[in-house]
Image 1: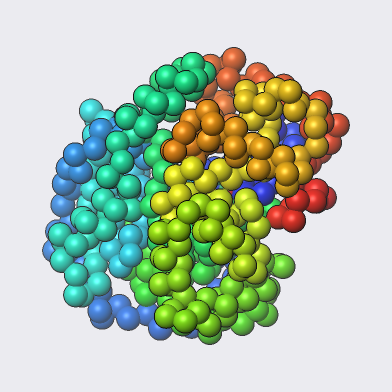
Image 2: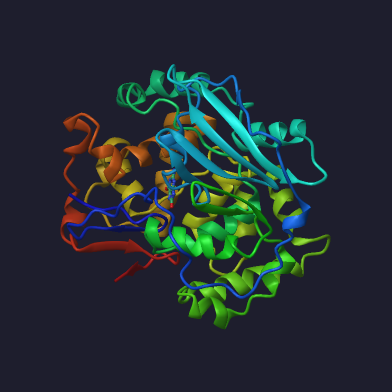
Length: 380
Ligand SMILES: Nc1nc2[nH]c(O)nc2c(=O)[nH]1
């Protein structure tokens, strides 16, 4: 049994890394006193659950929120997840028939309920019909068709690019629990939105607020070498003509190669992290994050002739190409499903023929760990 390090790594050390636990996890260390403007917060009178007009086959909360795309949402009930969408604090839950309903807890003072719903629909990428996309995948891949029966509703989110970038900077060579703690630390610097089931939620901090955090402070909070990537990236974004946020948003209009090239200019962003940001926040639906884990999937199912080879940056491009050839313009959405199927939490419940795949020879050789660093070298 292997455990999965999210982002750039796959570790194989006979241990399972648990999916973020439903209990509140404290930040790595208390952040410095924050400017929380609780007075600006507008709690909704009596939070009401309202239908979102989405079935479970279009959005499965447990397959979408705790599976490596975002580390900001928390499980706040059996089939319920809560998180911030911009300045809105929202819970989502499955009704007994599987349909999704939502509850708006609070918003910043100036925005309306209609704006919150619009932001939520945007965040959930609701303009894209998952069953249409999956029909195309299933037509060209019978294994996907079978997997789809078990992992229905695993949807790609459309996150705020700054939030997504910061989360994936934390994710490099890291595991879910630790990434979550780091992301909690950064998030706690933003305006307070509310508390649900013991979890405190915050709006994501602005670039300006982020720029007031020193590298040393992040190091002391346990970020290690990632501290300099965060401060360096924030600084570079702040120097962008027209604003860093606007620069990031402008990448939504570029071709994938251009968007990736732009992201790669940011400190700490390598090909894998860039692809995750492109896919989960920049409308680059055929971005393919590749690490040793995805390499395993690819050599098992898409490029068997390469089984046993060592993953190099050039082969990363071959893998991405193979995904796009097979699945088309939403190939990143297919990668997400195949990635989720490999998570220990899913392997435990999928039929055994999905979980019994043996690692390829090259990986078996390094069964203790196999990490691909962002520069393409293997790390220990
Ligand atoms: N769908 C995916 N989610 C991810 N999270 C993460 O850290 N890596 C991945 C990935 O490759 N695919």
